[in-house]
Length: 113
Image 1: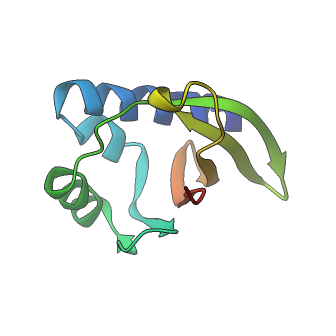
Image 2 (image 1 turned 30 degrees about the vertical axis):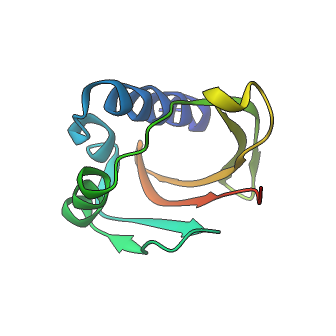
């Protein structure tokens, strides 16, 4: 799977999770020991599929995201995203480290304000 396909797959599964409350498809996109880090909010880090799934079940996001732009930098996918409610304003970055068609590490940053 190409890096941008992995990003697209993750975003689709995330948005589906927001809609349905089922985070399993998104979590399956991580390696078994995958990591999720948040920057700019008090949460995590989370390591492993089960802790990631629990985090999303306990505090589910209430909005979908859209990718504004993405590039590959040093083997990582760096993507600016927007919450749908922000109507295209940059909300932060997703920094995705791929490993064998899965996410080994995902860092999610949040823009202030």
